[in-house]
Image (cartoon, rainbow, N blue to C red; front, side):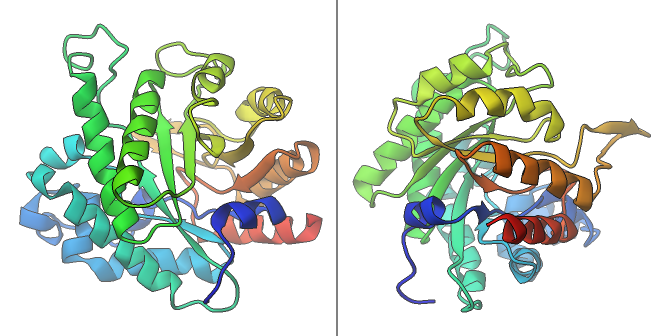
Length: 314
């Protein structure tokens, strides 16, 4: 669709629906080591090179059930994570290609504006920690890892950047700074910063939602959000507090309930109907919530149910 309104304008005028999980949808293709670049099993982001039709099909499946926005398959495509697969020196190139693929699928839909959101996940390090393995990395290295990723995503045409599933508030700050640095080389796009909280409302290293929000809300971000780790019910008190701040609009992208361990695997059992009811309740009660979607354990059926709920209350 040509002349679509900017992402932030769309968010202010409508509740925006994000897509659901990517990783579990990839697993439905039963990938073998030879499906990944250089046979590197588990290199999901690399499938843009070897199995782009899989990623397109997943993107398309969410758009077909009414998602307004899809996230790029770039969760692990910061320079540090890509280096683990031997692609660190191709960070900009990889992210540009991933974003272009998502944009090509969005271009297939002309019924309403659709948006591509550049996903930026954790580096795997915890810079606030004293852990000898996870904490010993320079802050400049982390910032650069995100700056290069953001540069590629913006070059590839994303409508906004999403720092997501963050477990260390210092890493969130570095990611924001890195993304803003990239924008000075490319162009300015909206920036969403998400944190991941446990069922007690705290990040992995103990930062509570109040401290996390206070730390990053004045850094020039456009939306603050919660994603992953828990289902919607466990997010309620945090969303209630965030809604009272009257500063930033909010994103809420929970898992399909709390994970349950079955045979060593995390299983998510919240049905599409129960999840959409819970998020519909958030939308009715908390007017700062402008974006909802699904994280781990969600699939197109969850997004379809959310579409119905949003349409019924707006």
